[in-house]
Length: 189
Image (cartoon, rainbow, N blue to C red; front, top):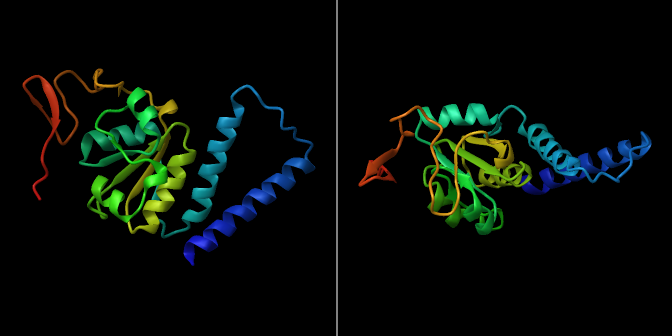
């Protein structure tokens, strides 16, 4: 019922935006990359409009996300396609594609529904949708930091790690070095 209400709220918002756009003489011939920005802004506005006072979803910047990732143990979820993930992803991010998010896959990627979960995609559109799905599944602390296009810190491409973006010798929380390779530290569960 809640999902249906949200769907119709979002649909009404989009319809209102469409009418306002035509009423102000806007044109749809954008071909300079602005469409991605407009879609991301719309998705962020939808999440913020639905967030209300008791939402588990928080929209944060890349800088805020980076600071929280290096000072807390968190789960970082990349909700893009496997191909996009293989091309480039954030260090220690787990792949959970948007179209596969359900109770089982979410529990495998982020077993603790009370722990902080960070979501991102390419531009912020899919991460906004993923955040709503995770909230509907009962996750209580979701941070949507938008897209990897706005991520100014280190990423990993394929199997070749790059620098972490942290000061020399410092590793993210939950990571250790084993035989020259970084490995996730097993949780104490």
